[in-house]
Image (cartoon, rainbow, N blue to C red):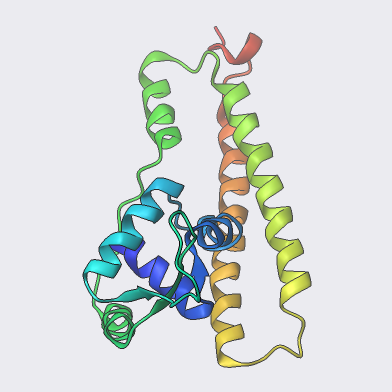
Amino acid sequence: MSLPHAILTALLEKPSSGLELTRRFDKSIGYFWSATHQQIYRELGKLEQSGFIRALPTEAPARGQRKEWEVLPKGREELTAWVARVEDPKTVRDPLLLRMRAAAVVGSAGLEAELRRHLALHERQLAEYLEIEKRDFPPERDTEPDRLRHVVLKGGIGLETFWIAWLTDALDQLPRGQDGADAP
């Protein structure tokens, strides 16, 4: 049930149209909770039906006019309750981990290129997170909301750092054969 809560969070930060919300999702929340534009629009309808959000009134409603959404008190109460809810950690489900396990059974031919590709992707993501940290979290930004947002970003930095170290180690463990094939 996290997508509705991600949307409520984003709308409490700033009332937005569906299009603005999807763009903001792509630039912030989407780093750790992804959703398609269709999922976001579908969820906006459900949140409205539940009485959690409403479209802000417009001066002259017209067909096809974009709606700007705001969170209602019932939506804030739901988000507050969700923040305090007890929830166990989720099991990591990453196909690359399963592929590594499969390589132990069938051999690692062709795996090296994919590990190197993943390594490059994580290095780029880490660089992007570090740039965001430098830009958005100077020492003088020290309010509680800033600190909490920074902690989320530091979590992303830590995960990317982990993946880079893990992938580097995984590459070191591959047999030294031709093109990542098992060595004789």
